[in-house]
Amino acid sequence: MMWIWFALAVLFIVIEAFTTDLVAVWFAAAALVLGVVAGLATELHIVWQIVIFVALSAVLVAATRPLVKRLLKKNKNTETNLGLVIGHKALVVEEINNDFEQGAVKINGLVWTARSENGEIIEKDTLVTVKQIQGNKAFVSKE
Image 1 (spheres, helix red, strand yellow):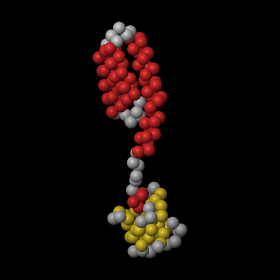
Image 2 (cartoon, rainbow, N blue to C red; image 1 turned 90 degrees about the vertical axis):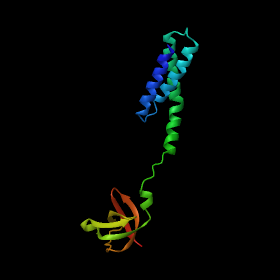
Image 3 (cartoon, one colour; image 1 turned 135 degrees about the vertical axis):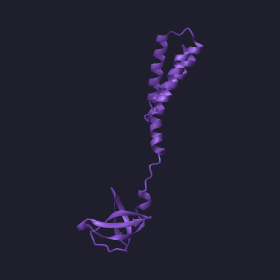
Image 4 (spheres, rainbow, N blue to C red; image 1 turned 60 degrees about the horizontal axis):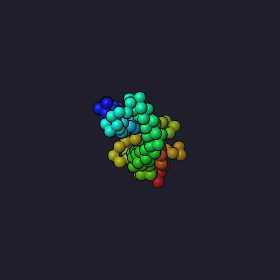
């Protein structure tokens, strides 16, 4: 009977490999434990094995999943290119005029649609500072 638990453990590991929810891994751990228990206690009835599996799975999920989710969220590197842009200098490559919804700046070699942060017209070839990014627009101000 223990081979069924090991097969279930492998199945749960495969399921976990295709998801990012960190749920099936706890069932895999419980199935591995039950595989060992079933191998050592061959007289343990299947009903008790299932009860132990359900209880152990519930304990593992309840006790460890919130902690692991917190740790993964804390260590997740979600840095975007915004940190490389905000506060940096940019060159106006197309006059910025908010009234006509026009303007572009070059930041780190890339051209961004740009708007003046305070609404002023900014001439081409002016050096500006990127104050914020909203969507695909850079909001800039003169030095």
